[in-house]
Amino acid sequence: MTREADQQEASDGASGEERPAGREADRRKASNRVSGEERPASREAVVDAASALAVGSVVAAVVRWRDIPLSPRAVAVGAVGALALEGALLRHRDRVRALWERPSVRWGATIGGAGAAAVAAPRAPGRVLWALLGGVVSYLTLLAVVTARKTTNGSG
Image (cartoon, rainbow, N blue to C red):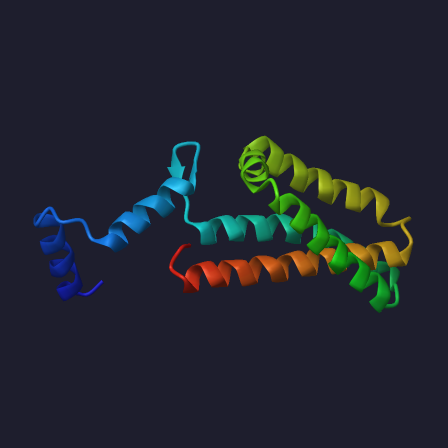
C-alpha cells in the first residue's frame, strides 16, 4: 500500500464510520472461516484445484506411460459428467462445502482418489482414463471461471 492509502485507511478507521466495502469484506471473511481460520475464496479455489490436479496428474501420467491415443468422445463424456455432478452438488452447496472443508474429507478424497487412480489406471480402458481427464479439466475450467467472476465482482 502507498503511504497515502495507509493514511486514508487510518483516517477512515479513526472516524468510527464503517464503509460499506468494509462490511462486505467482513461478510466475505465470515463466510470463508474454516476451523477459526480466515481464508479468502481464491485460496479455497487453489486448494480445490490442487486436489483435482493431484488426481488428474496420476491419470495423465498413466495415459502418457501407456501411450493411449486421444479419445475426444470420452473427454467430452467426462467433461459433461463433471459439469452434471457439479450441478447436482450445487443444490446442496452448503452441506457439500461444510463436508469438503473438513481436513479428513479433503485429504481423504485427494489421497484416496490419487491412490485409486494409481492402482486402477494401469489396467483401466483408455477411454475411461480420457473421460477422467476430461472431467478434471472441465472441473478446473469451471473453478477458474467461478473464481474469476467472484474476484471481478469483488466477492472473493
